[in-house]
Length: 220
Length: 44
Image 1 (cartoon, rainbow over the protein chains, first blue to last red):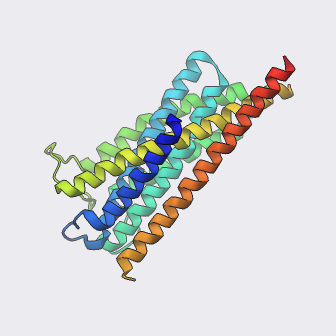
Image 2 (cartoon, rainbow over the protein chains, first blue to last red; image 1 turned 120 degrees about the horizontal axis):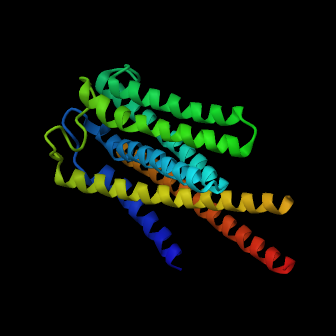
């Protein structure tokens, strides 16, 4: 029952975020109607980081307990990380087209997300190259941990070090949040809503993984 | 219809679609889990 209430609440919450983004939040100067991309682009980038962090945590659990279920969870997390980084890239490109005149400009922010995508796509290339499940899981876990070391540099540090056309992050270099109150409300609502939606997506996939491993155990 | 409202409606339709699919998937997995538990109990 609680789960059903959570799902209904989440549906209403994200519907309100979408309506709020279009009808309630004011537009930012210089961006006009395209300000609304902000409420979808930043949460996608945020979930990318969360998904890759979860993958690193599951990788640590795998290396610690040698239980293949954690390897499967790490794979699911990385799949979501790639999906959401692609969504962040697409929404960012739409924004770039309007603000900078082209979908892709090799700006430090765009270059860093591109490198991040390549690093995590290589994770799946590595997995497909190893047949033995334990060996594949161990090497993938180590790779996933090493890959996650690059995430803070590529997402938070490099775009702040090099001059970029990208707008100031939400918390700017002066550690202040400069955003209209109504925009901030919708933005925080979007962050919370999409994070909850991601957790729900992850739970479903986690259940699929559990079921699959149960069936595999029965087969043997 | 104004373009703003048209885009809003499209966004809402897409969101309802994604949510419905996710909900359906969750229900199907729940059924499979219950079936798996039943099979295990019968086996014991």
